[in-house]
Length: 328
Image 1 (cartoon, rainbow, N blue to C red):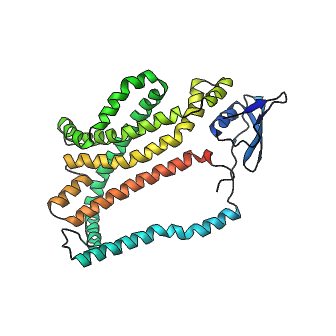
Image 2 (cartoon, rainbow, N blue to C red):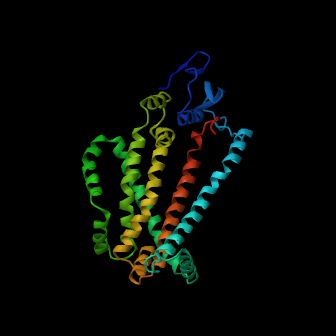
Image 3 (cartoon, rainbow, N blue to C red):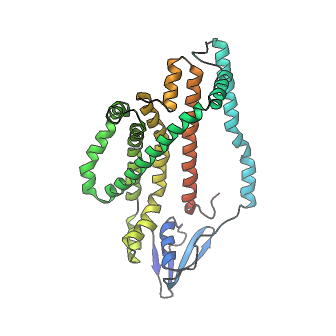
């Protein structure tokens, strides 16, 4: 709980030793008045509010990497080799299984054959062409599902009567497997891109909706009281309190939705499509070209990891205000 008091000298004093977690509220105060603060070992001791309605500048300071942090980075460098070493080990184990089991290529092709097949589909342009189709479906479906989930999730969090009306239908829609819905969408909308986008939007909608609702409701009532005490408008409360407070949970939902979006696009392509990585998997399966199936699957994995990595970078950038001066 936040504890503060304001004296006649205009200094707002926090409880001794209290660590300011609510950076978004303090950030809002910076837009109202000049802010001076005194800190000790990363703890805010007091904040002085000077001339109203003036802006002194950025409230946050940049911290350079200390020698201790540099030393920790150097010591952790061997840990960065874990991923490439694990990949090499997995390829070696894969080759060993093929050699010992003496499996035919249509059952389990060796890594070298998969690599050769990868080079072939890259050179003839088919892999890039099908990958761009799937990527477009993933991006469009994720965007539509994201916008819909954010708008509806916010109002579900603010209006309890709306949640009581819509929640049963939303939960019921998620109880039906997407594999059962995809054929209907393909029948209604045709085997084109639109049905794949809609399948992708449906599969990412629910996790993002839940995270938005939980994030908005997690805002402390004390913070609302603090914002109202400074006569913040509804837009200012949304911008400086609710959005930053819900952002960590919201971005977590996007990370889940980013990986599910790839699944949704492939499910739609499995049901009916003439292009895309899901279509490429069906072609390889029908021709017993298992190496082509592996190439398509690995491309889907790389696509999902790339989208997940982009969301993680955006999350790191947007949540930079959460870092403490003494954080390592």
